[in-house]
Image 1 (tube, rainbow, N blue to C red):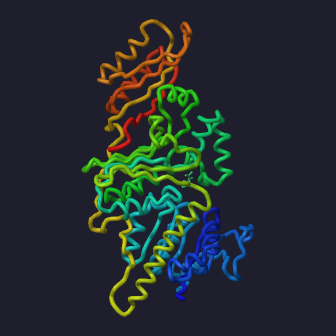
Image 2 (image 1 turned 30 degrees about the horizontal axis):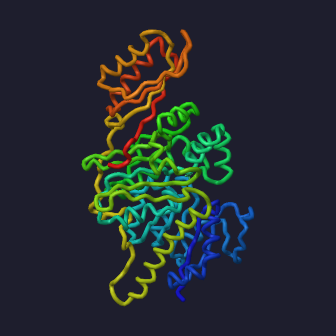
Image 3 (image 1 turned 90 degrees about the vertical axis):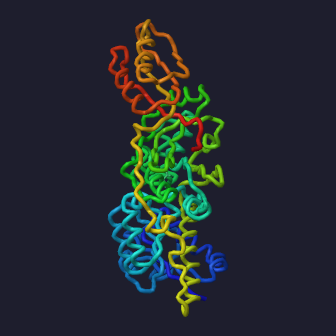
Length: 446
Ligand code: HSE
């Protein structure tokens, strides 16, 4: 049986999971691929820590270059994480004619366009299903299953750590730091959890699916990003009273000549399926013209779910290698059968991402205001001057001359107007604290 040689770079949580799956599922994978997947190397600087795997002699090495430069290696699987070393290794592997699989969303977000071009120049594949949504097949759904659609919007919970924290706070009243520590202990969080809680991990993933959906280059720098560190139990409670749940959403909308792409805490109706995605689970809804609404749900983080997605890419490439090698005598090849970013390279354009100030949505605004006659009319006057119409206002508590919470829900307004109004409101001497603003998505379709 044809042997396809694989090198894993990085034996952390996901690398260990991939090595385990390759070894444990060898027989079933052979029966599905028609070739045997041979784990020739696992390279990691730390070869001492026990990973609970019995590697064959010579497999577990510390020198990644040995694996990347070995002419027998067909597929390099980069699971080191981080940007610099991982980027150098990936580019070197592609230039050596190896197909590359990675789960490294931060790297793709920043250097994906260069990597895609390098893969094209060297006629090899670059696959990254595990980079978005853990085991949920988001990449292949957008790129392959929905190929005949115009994608209108993508809305997702794409960070397991944040979803875990928000769930623990809202369901159990768990303090933020305790919930974060638990997410870290379960292996959901990034090495630097700042990337999770400040929304950057979700933005990395959003930049990838946005490019795939609309045929544009990967653009991380113009995505508006806010994390969950300013969300308080009080806002979660108020949201509940208004019939909303707070989720960290990654939102992308296709406005044809411009794209909306933003990550921020969002209030969604408690009746929406995304509001019922709890713990570290991820989910994404994709609105497209032929299909209407499609929703995917699955484990967004963790060793084996992520490893499962990596194996799906390895399998795709191995199957392509098999078809190509069966056609050796003809010119047929199935290398790069599916374009890496879904569209043929020459059809990938640079569609601009709208500044967040241009978006239209409803807003939840919470103010700490001195409880005195005339204060509310001052606030609503400022909002009215900027054409911001209010759906409902609630005052919580009564404390003469002390600050009380005023909570407002607006009708659809332009973000720029809301930002300017809030700046003015924050400057009033009756407003002792910075206002809290959370965007509302009442209708999660385009
Ligand atoms: N830190 C990520 C998360 C891991 O929490 O979702 C999966 O990408």
